[in-house]
Amino acid sequence: QVQLVESGGGLVQAGGSLRLSCAASGLTSSIYTMNWFRQAPGRGRLFIAGFNWDTANTNYADSVKGRFTISRDSAKNTVYLQMNDLKPEDTAVYYCAARPLYGTIWSWGQGTQVTVSS
Image (tube, rainbow, N blue to C red):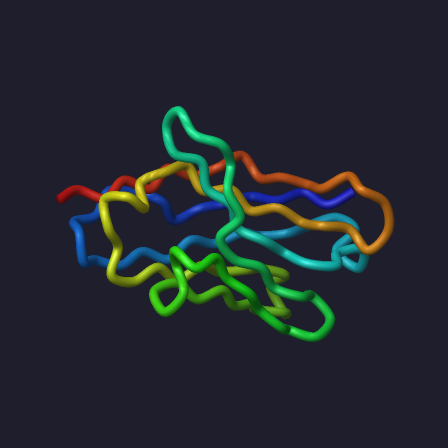
């Protein structure tokens, strides 16, 4: 089992930046990909960025391409989401999630609120 703890959310003005962190502990060798999702009020949880734990390949939702960057600090087992040029529509609770190498049960963090004011 993998445990995830997110941090770094907050309130920022449109055009500003934030960096979210997701620290993984436990059975980190079982991670296939680390991902960021977000959920805006009244909407479903949407994928926004992914990081392959083995190859370091990344992928992004179209809505954040060119503005958000996912990265990893291997020594700290931590994944980051650098968010630049934030827009009010980026306001949401952001979750990190670990997809396992085997099985279908993902591990989720508790979520961190990001609010972008116009």
